[in-house]
Length: 245
Image (cartoon, rainbow, N blue to C red):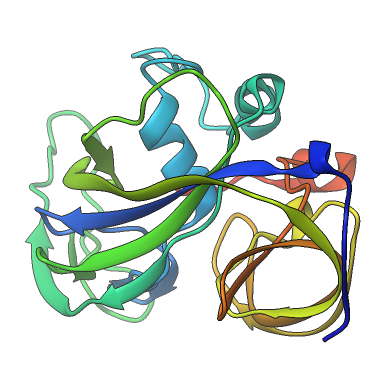
């Protein structure tokens, strides 16, 4: 890996954060009949809303539409120079939860069975169990402190945030490898070469990727792309109807 330092103004502040689950966390990453499975990675959109929805984003209590507004909301974080990476699992396990929803026949017509002959109001959720830990990075010199407690997933599950380190790192340039999961839309001026895909909505993540461009060397085995920011191509924003919030 060849590297060349950029100018001094290219230094960036990076917070190393750990997240600990205090409840079961559920995202509908994959839907297989009556089983809804949660991916073991946490998407950076979900983390961004959870960390900043009470300070910068301020999402309304009532949403009149099911269509997500990622571009408008996360652009507010671009304006203050804040960026949150996806979270990788450090120590996670799963638990299986079965649910049953009562059919309110006085409100709507009862639909007892779907085509594969299983009840529509019964399902199972494979969710992340309490006690799981994750690691992610918050980049930028924004003024707002990170909260200690956040809510994640469709259950609004409780999670604890711990800032492990907070320091300035100089940017360098060259060919480098990044094992941390990344959002491919947000990579900035970096040329991607090889990568693995983590399939999950609304944007699949990348891991074990090799880049050519500017990067931040936080530790010997932790290198992150320099210049990451929330980016939403017009075709991606117009076609996105599912969310992870």
